[in-house]
Length: 303
Image (cartoon, rainbow, N blue to C red):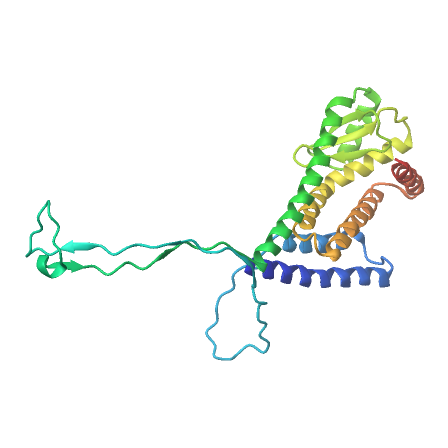
């Protein structure tokens, strides 16, 4: 029950901060750079990723707390009947009066037998189901459901990639890709692959990222800008933030503000990525980049 109270307190407090940030973004009209909002989401996500409060040092003070909140009663919802095992008393002969091995004495006084009182009845612990147990089970069911849903979707996508993707072999595409990596000062670059069935480029994978292009993506400025966009995602490590949001949504699936936060993270990472990509382009190229990204977004929605 204490774990659930800590989790609810953390989720409630962070939910208020999330709503304030969303309201502030709406009132300011996105005046501040999206990368700063992404940093705020990172800090909030890291706090929400720990479903408990760190222990604080106890201060020796006689001053009482101004507000004391009492935990709700952990009511017992179901209790099974206990199993009782009765034990009979045992009679042990005294050392001063030997007992014949064949004929038992008629009375205890004749034999000098000491009577040991009967042992108390042994009662097995009864099974009980409390309100805290039910709430913990419901929370675990929801958390595991979110993780299984996302994990299954990821495994299906990986299986699809193993079947339909192939390393890029076009020399012009590889030269263009290498040139963009050098321009972004990337020491390591994700593997470039083409995949049938894709309509937009995408970056996939956390441990070993892969940049995926549609199989029939035509060469030109649109392809160059799409590669720049995805490499900027890779440079910013946005996929780690999105993975963190999956874990946070699993822990706090009951909090609608957390799901609003996940949507805001998806939107702000794209905006921050565009802001980062535009820094590498001239003024004349920025309009063409915007058109290419809008076309890619429209194709992704149609898919």
